[in-house]
Amino acid sequence: MTYPDNVSSQTPKSLAGDMVSITRPLHTKINKLITSRLPLAIPPKAPDSGPYACGLLHILPVYMTFEKLWLDIIDAIPADALDHSNSNAENGKVHRLEVSERVHTILKEIYLPQLFRSDRLRADIKSMTGWSDDVLDCQIKAIRGTGQLSVFTSHIKQVVHAKPHVLIAYSYNLFMALFAGGRFIRATLEKAGHEFWSVVPEPIKPTMQPCKSYSATTYPLEPINDSRLEQVTEDDIHSHDKSLLPLQFWRFDSENDGEDLKQEYKAKLLQWESELTAEEREDILQESLIILESIDLLVGQLDAVCSDVQEEKPATQMRVRPSLAGLLGNNQFGARLRDSLLIARERGIGNPFRRQSLGAPENENRGEYDDTPATSTDTACSDVPKSMRFAKLLPIPPRKHRIATAKDGSSSHNLYVKPQRRDASGTMIGPALVGVFGLFFLYVLYNRVGGVTG
Image 1 (tube, one colour):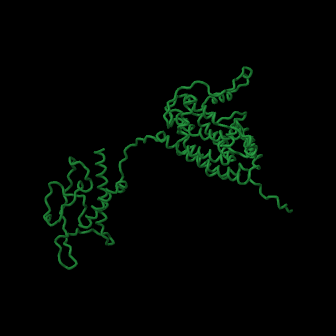
Image 2: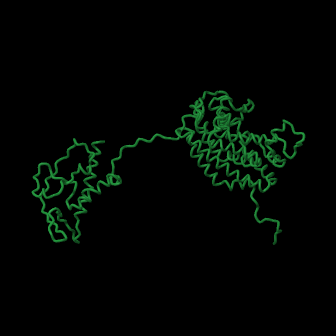
Image 3: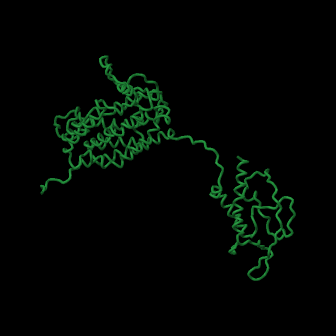
């Protein structure tokens, strides 16, 4: 069987499918960023709803900016339908935001007012903070001009004026995200309970605007009529209680809590996307990447604003007695130990940390040694208080030494070599025993000192 040349073997992806594919890595990263910070907005990390209100204050300007531009385009007269000779002051807005009749039709057809979030975001913030509209407007004005939020909102205005069709990227990425990850976020926030959300929060960052109690019902709720009382279930009451929480940003006015709106929006977009040119389609895909990259940077701005909220007091830990491996890992201590062992090996003397007992008779040949052997308190424990005294050591029995002979055959009166023990194979074991006993003695001494000073 043969196929016509004009029939493609593969069905092309929809515009929505292309946006999902191109943004998948960034979308996964954003999900991890938000879910990892979600515990900071609820108990036990957060004492009140202040951190969550701070986050909404940084999201609200983004929705306000692109939603207002969309409404302006719908209200405007298409640029190619204008009679420029009869234009007047009322058409001033049209000249500032020009859009073709084709793009105007697409944006008007896929517009669903129930998806818009600005009013719900404002209502949630007012419910938590008790602010009036004037106070909230002042807070929005102060915050939207800061950091990455200022860059993002300025970019939205510029790109929409130049390419109005990119509003499709904002509607899809910022509305559809509320149905998948948004369901999880809403459920997590609801678990905090009514008591948590009813607490008046501390002043909201970054402006530190004080809050007050706000008892008025913010959202118009559907009353339960007497005729329906017999049909009301516990789930209905539970759902009605949740509608009182300041989490309406994540809720939708529809029978299926927005699921029907999502399907309607996708159907409309699929119906009208064929009217877009290839260049316009590419603009929408590229803008989708910019949106998620900007949100990533916006999360970083929020981290800086709420940095002290995220900081945790270090847990108090019990003092752990240092191990020998830990002591050797100390650069200063390890260097001092190595120097002592090297000096002992070069001099050919016994354990450098041993000393003669107090009151023991002087060695007859003591004057032939160039220096007094280093003591433990002088070498290994220089930080031990001078008032400390250690028990007397047993007398060291005198030992015979042989005189080392120089290479030229002459006797050296300044160099004495301690007789070294050898194992069965003839290998000297003196230096090895010096190191082993020295480390063992040092470990015991350090623990004793640690117990006294601790």
